Length: 299
Image (cartoon, rainbow, N blue to C red; front, side, top):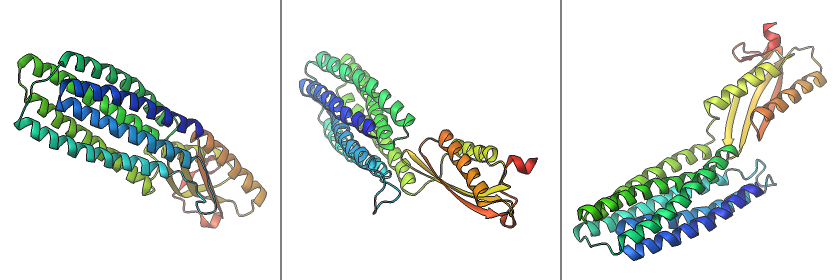
């Protein structure tokens, strides 16, 4: 987690540098579309800072008041990002409306677009890197940050292409239209981030692929037990909580049942890194005959 917070801290620096470039481009040209692009980069700086503190808190682990850890704080970071994106979109719509009815010629458009292009290339590389790390480490905060940076790249490309068209055609109102399109795009991105993060806060189950892997692992590694049922999962940042009931023969000793549980838990930790497994052992008269069948059941 300390390493992940370091990525978030680096993201603050990258976002601040990109913001400076985009703000310079907007100031040189007077373009409302480039201004909207710079405004989104302000959100990138704020979100990267929030992600850093969220990852630091998440790394604290469990304590007396938070016995399941602080992992969900990352979801709050992603929700905040979505809310800030919505604020930025509203500000962009406001400026775009004013500019549409009072369009102005752009100053030094070639230089401004070139500077914005450099910022976009930097953002593309960093956004791809953050998204890859966030997905690999199952970090909602880093993944959300990376996705927002990549959405910034897409909107920046649209801004650059649109302004080139405005300069070539002389249609100054295109500047405002492009800015409005940027606002609509980032508003959609913000909604998606909020929706996904709220799912995590509401203890959404593991995704179907992970759930299938969990069931397969239990079925293979529970040799000696009869079945597993009442499987429940929930994801909290990089951690997946797994709970189920394991039915064993009534004559099995506590030690033997414990060995089976240890074997299952170790296998699940390999299959789903960062998992927290809770197993409730039951005698065979509690079997439901509708759960996960083990190898011994088929023998």
